[in-house]
Length: 91
Image 1 (cartoon, rainbow, N blue to C red):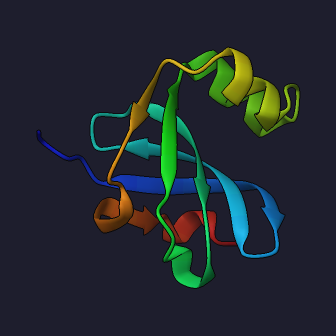
Image 2: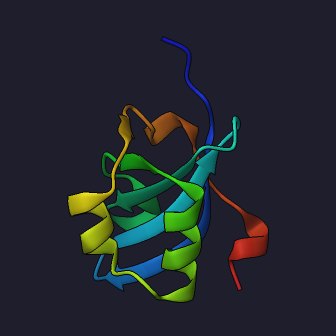
C-alpha cells in the first residue's frame, strides 16, 4: 500500500489535546481529520471528503460532526508518519 503525505491546512476545532482539522494529501484529496495529544502524537484518523464539503467547512456552513456522520467517502489510515502542518496555515 502506497502512502501519501497528509498536510494539515486548517484547524476547525480544538478541545484539549484533540483537534479537528482540514487536510489534503499529495494527490490533492481533501480530508477531515482528528488528531490527539501534544504534537499530534496519538494515532490520527482522516476521512476523505469532497471539495464542496471542504469549502463548506472552511466557511462554517456545515458542522464537522455532520460531515463525519453523513458525508465521508473513505478513510486514510496509518497517517502518523505522513502528518505535517502547513506553515502557512499556522497563523
